[in-house]
Length: 303
Image (cartoon, rainbow, N blue to C red; front, top):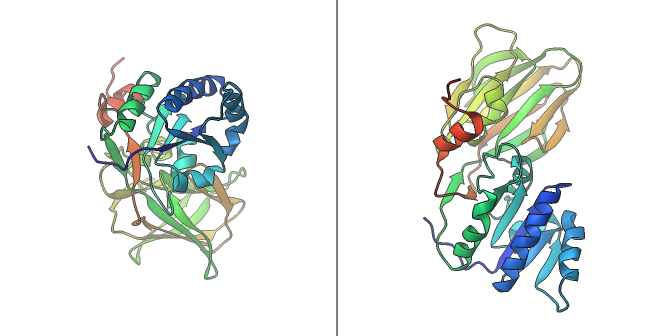
């Protein structure tokens, strides 16, 4: 448990085009308004926010702001959706990190681990000052350099992926760790993942499951054209540098499956631990990482 400042303002981000999430958001917001808690909706849900306002004759403490402003304006953020919706919020923690409560409205949900039946009671405890169970997830800082110019720099929660486009041609990359040359990768791409992201794309590419509190990063090739190339687990003190040296077609750098940047030959991607702060996830006291593995991925389940 960890003490938090008094919760006075809660932000809401809701999965697009999911009626169930919108309906549940109305229920939660009505409860919060009775508790004298200010509510801020991300502007992508302004239609829903206006509907909630119309249910009240008196003025209510509800605002609509750009999603990018929520992290600076709120004491806590509630995400109603799946892991993709959660990641769209988690990647906003450049300047400030506040606790995020992910309510699983999707199909898998490793990051959105709070069930709908737990959501209101969890918020009630939080408002009353009961310290929540927080899972801290360490992030990676990713930088894309082109001829000495920084094209992109920012944190990722799950992974950064270098991958080829639609044309089925293998790309070539040279990999260094702490300025030591490791190997050349000829593959469909490569994944640089956090432990939290080890159960995402890296797992599908044959990478290991890494307990998410470990301070490490994972390198997992995608369909490598080699019988000997295997995933690597590195300490979080490592700096990984990958140079795209063979680009026969379209190549993308994808960040948490949210943003994609076109890469050019000789572009360099540098990845290291993000040291500014961690991602704070409000967790359920009824489940741990291994129970999530069994529940979500059927880990160890026999037919």
